Length: 190
Ligand code: ADP
Picture 1 (cartoon, protein in one colour):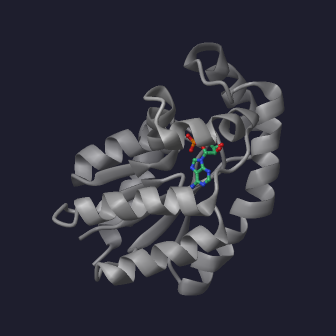
Picture 2: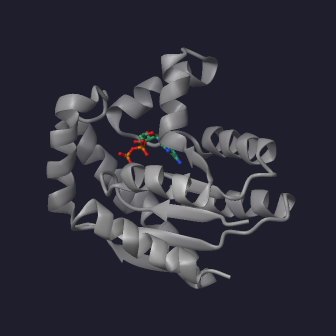
C-alpha cells in the first residue's frame, strides 16, 4: 500500500496535484476540505456544525476531522493506498492519524510538502475566489487561514521531519513540472 500525505499551505496546489496523483497511483483520495464542503452542501449535522468556522477561515475541531478520516480509512482498507490532502493540519491530528494507521496495520510512506512563498499564495487565492464560489476565499478569511496555518499547521512539518518522512517539493512553476517532481519522489518509495 502506498500512503501519501500531500502537505502545504492554503493555495499551494494540493487539490490540483492530487487529482493527477490519485489517477496515476490509483489512490483513495481523502481531502478533509472537500469532505467538509460536501457535508455543508448536504446540510448534515457535521455540515451545520462546521459552517461558520470554515467560512471565517478557522480550523474545524480535531475530533470531527479525525473521526471522518478514521471512517474512510476503515471503509477502504483494500485500496491501493491513500492520498491525504489538507490532513493532518495540527500535531494532534498527526498523532491521531498515527494511531489510525497502527490500528489498521498501515503506515505513512511519505509526506510531500509543497513549498510556495506566501505572497504568491495570497494572489492565487484571491484569483481563485473570483470563480470558486467558496465562502472562505475572501481576503479576511484568507488572512485568518494563514494565521491558523502558521500557528497550528506548520508544526506538523517538524513532527514528520522527526519521523524522517518529510520531503519538500518546490510548488512554484508549471503544474506538469511540479507533478513530475512529486512522482519522482513517490517512485523512490519501496
Ligand atoms: P485550503 O487548503 O485552500 O485552505 P481546504 O479545502 O483544505 O482549503 O480546507 C478548507 C477549510 O476546511 C479549512 O480552512 C478549515 O476550516 C477546514 N478544514 C479542512 N481540513 C481540515 C483539518 N484537517 N482540520 C481542521 N479543519 C480543516
